[in-house]
Length: 263
Image (cartoon, rainbow, N blue to C red):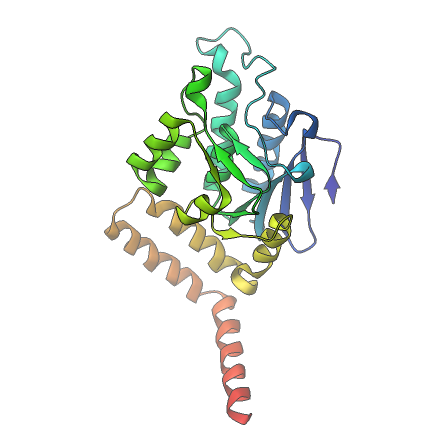
């Protein structure tokens, strides 16, 4: 099922892969109040149902997003932080995206600037084509990094490299993003979304419980010590051993071994 008349297109595929498309192409897929609200509604479903196999996030018409829509005021209501209300909605959505109990893949064609880069960084993997560019020129607009970008970048490439990017306001191309570890793979031109879906189709190879628990382990490892990680490994290993996936995987391994022995 595909819901197309939206600022966030949602495709619930038969293989349980969910494809989310930022869909404001006339505004370079910049994020609006409506887009964040639709994103929140999708996250409600992703969090509340049986975990999807994977989530792929991309932008319409071959362009990820230019970030926040600077043509529209980011304020709402009369609260103490009303001028940053759109950002607050975005922060909540990005935190929830990062914590989803299933693998998430950002497929970046074209630009990913400002908070859009933070959205991509919140995903577990980022696949880029050679057209991908990343930038966070917040200082040029008299603003500070948002969407958790400083947090994500500092942890992924170190505080000094993150500082260089933010203070210089420079743009990174796809090759540099891959070399720094900010992108997982480089796709052929125009193939980032296709490659992301293909990767999603291989995750776990049917062992969805193991994939979900691996995601939970990886997410927790960002803030836990080794002892805590070991404790979670034990608990998750026990859970896996009680399910059918381990049995099926072992049977498949034995069958392959027997087939190789006969050949």
